[in-house]
Amino acid sequence: QVQLAESGGGLVQPGGSLTLSCVASGSVFGTYRMAWYRQAPGKQRELVAYISRSGNANYADSMKGRFTISSDNAKNTLFLQMNNVSPEDTAVYYCNAWTALMGTREYWGQGTQVTVSS
Image (cartoon, rainbow, N blue to C red; front, side, top):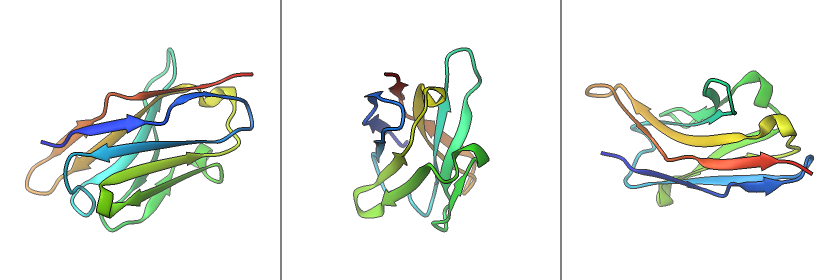
């Protein structure tokens, strides 16, 4: 069982920056693909970015160049640096851990609200 706890959400002005954090309850990097998803009101949850088991970062096309995903493996922490945000980035952001090693397992955090508004 993996528990994920997000933090760092809040209110940010358009054009501003915000960094989200996700702390995992155990050692996850190398075993799980670690990802950020988001869900805006009235919309489906969508993938923002992920770090593969091998450590490669991948982004949804619309997030490239503005968002940066990174990790501190020693602290079991995943980050999402969000730059030049716009109101369209307003959503609940979720941390996700997924693996198909020795059976498929997937875990979600409770989410953290990001609101972009002036």
